[in-house]
Length: 336
Figure (tube, rainbow, N blue to C red):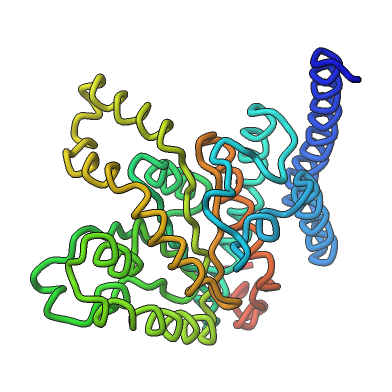
């Protein structure tokens, strides 16, 4: 029988090996990305960019888009919020991945933005959901720090206003959708208009249950019109939430984050999980899948979001738009 100390040594050795593998890939990816500006031929730049992207993807033993996508056989209770599926490195490795991949992600974002200026309808919608203190705000800051804010739009959805209640529940969401070439980030979303009445009974079931089908139709139309949709649920544990709540109560700079209603929602944790389970089962579609991201390790959830964004934009297969003016005439006007 293998004793615990042997297992621990084997696990530590495996992680060291994986850490070396990850950093070798990141070193090579960083070299490719830094050399992009020196490459003169478009074909050379394209090949170098693809090589860098391949190397960044190789950091993951299994792509998050594959490993974390919700399937009908999944149950929320099966997801360990403290786990790190698909990533076998250390926290330092994960943070370095975030740093290196930021350059690649920013390049893909600018590529999408440039094509949007030229008439492409490709755009990206990120839906962030999770229980209070699951890290949604940190993810938003992380996404903005990795891209160009010029092409990003943030919207936090709270309790509907009186004006919003006079309209269909999708009205306020439709107004905040990304423009061509842009990324929109929703901190909470139209899914609150199903989960909240489900948990609190604010509307009869005959009102909120048909919204599942409405949402699927709404998102399918968006996808057909060129909008990629990434729906992320941050899976935090109740104990981790407790730690963050206590931290807010002890830090004067975080008092503003705490509201007694947060504890009311915490008291209904199981009811929320049941409601979200139904949401995922009924609205995770091929056009707009849900990803359940373990979030107790904040660095891991941020690394996952980076990879999901990068993978989605890379999958658009866009090239830089061609010059739409006569270069010789332009040079003549510039005095060359």
